[in-house]
Image (cartoon, rainbow over all chains, first blue to last red; front, top):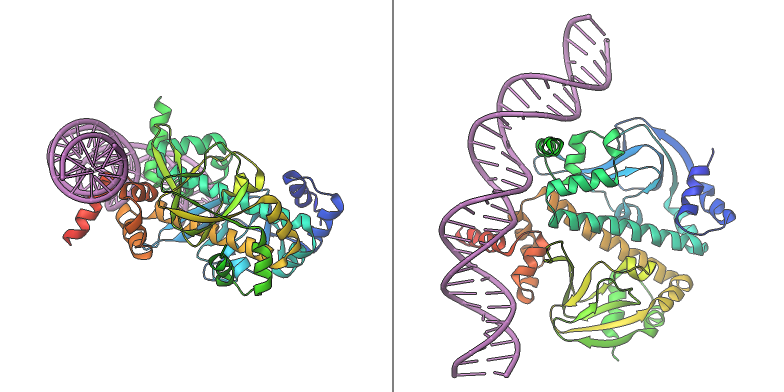
Length: 193
Length: 193
DNA sequence: GTAATTTCTTGACATTTATCAAGTATGTTT
DNA sequence: AAACATACTTGATAAATGTCAAGAAATTAC
C-alpha cells in the first residue's frame, strides 16, 4: 500500500500540501492487471477513476469492418478515465485494455465528488487534468489533419520513443491513423536516408 | 443587457436554480464583433471566457506553409474558450475569429475562479463543459483517423447542415482535414448519385 | 452598376496511403 | 524443440487525396 507514486503525481503537477494530497488519495485502492486485459469494456458504465502507476495501456474502438482503431495510448504515471462515462454515467464507446502488466490505483465517483466539492486544491487539479488532456487531443487532431503520416511518425518517435519499446507497431500505426503496412514502409524509407 | 440566452444555456445543460444562474452570470458583459474579426490572436494570453450568443466563429492555426488550418467551428449558443491559455495563462497557438457578425458575453478569470470555488453548481457546470468539449474532439479524431473524407463530409452535412449556410466551403474543407478542391469533387460525386 | 476580390469548380497530373496476399520473423505454448 | 500464433515486411496494384493552374460564379467594395 505504498502511495508514493500516486501522491507524487499530484505534487508534480502543481504546488500542493502533502497533507492535502494524502487526504485526496485516502480512499484509493491498489490492484494489478496482466497484459492484454480489459480495464473497461465498451457499452459499460465506468464506475471508477484510475491512476496508472506502472505499465502501458490503450483505448480503442471497433470500426464498421470490425477492425480495432486505437484512440489513445496511456503510459504511467497518468490518470486513465472515460470522462463521459464516469462523470455522466453513460455507456463507453471505447474499450480500455492493458498492453503490458499494469498496476493501478482506483477510487469511485462518490469519493471524487466528495473531494471535488470539499477540497479546493482537488478542484483545481481536476480542471488541470481536463485542460491537459484536452490539449493533448487538440494537438493530435491538428497533426492528423495537417501533416502527412511520415511527419506524424517522426514526431511521435522523437517525443515518445519509449512507446516503441513496449507497444506493437500495428497498434502504434492505428494510433497514427495509418495501416501497419504503411508504417512499415515509412520506417523502411527513413532507414534508407 | 438581456441575459436570457446566456442564462438559458445553463438551464439547458442541467437542472439548476434560476437564482444560482443569475448569480453566476452577474459579472458577464455584452459586446459584439463584425464579420472576420479576431476575438483572440495567436501568441496572446486569454484573459476572458466568452459565451457566443449569436453567430458563427472558428479557431485556426497557420501551418508551416502559412496556410490556415481550421481547428474548430463554433456556433451559438456555446462557450468559446482557449482552455490552456485561459486557465493556465499560456500563449494561444490558435487564432479565434468571427465568421459572421457575432454577439458575446464575457467575464474574466477572477470571476470564474470566484464562482468555481463558491458555487457548487458552477463547478459541476464547468466540468460538464469540459466533458462535452473533450468528447466532441474525441469523436472528431476518431472520424479523421478511421473514415474517409466523403463519409466525414456526409456526417457533418447531416448533423450540422446549418453551417453550410453560413461558412465558406474552403473553411469547412479545412475543418474536415481536406483541401477545398477535394471537397468540391466529393460534392460533385454525391450530386451525381 | 461595375470593378475588384474572394470563393468554388474543374482538368491534368502527382503523391500519399490503402488493400490484398504472400512470405519472413518473432514470440508463446506445450 | 516443434507447433502455433502473432507481428512485421514487402510486392503489385488500386483508391484516395493533393497540387497547380485556369476559369466560372458569387460576393463585396466603390
